[in-house]
Length: 123
Image (cartoon, rainbow, N blue to C red; front, side, top):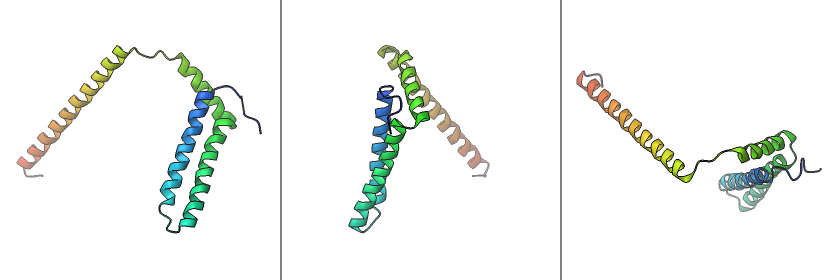
């Protein structure tokens, strides 16, 4: 079994493999904590963690469609024009203010609706 397109998309592959490792550890811990028998718990945690981690590594290294997607993703990410810090901060402030204004508007409409429905005796 050889690594498909070895040397290409290394960063995307590493992130995928590490995500599989993290997911495997999390799943093994989450499921393992519900098993009362210590020996069975350890065996299940090791097998489940290895299976999920192995699946992530397999997809990151050997599965042709996934590897091609990861390579293309890394290539496209290099082409992205990232905003400068000043533009990023400005855009972030606009988004936060917009969300706050929308939240206040929705809260106001909700309170007004409750008041009107209470006034007419429906609520």
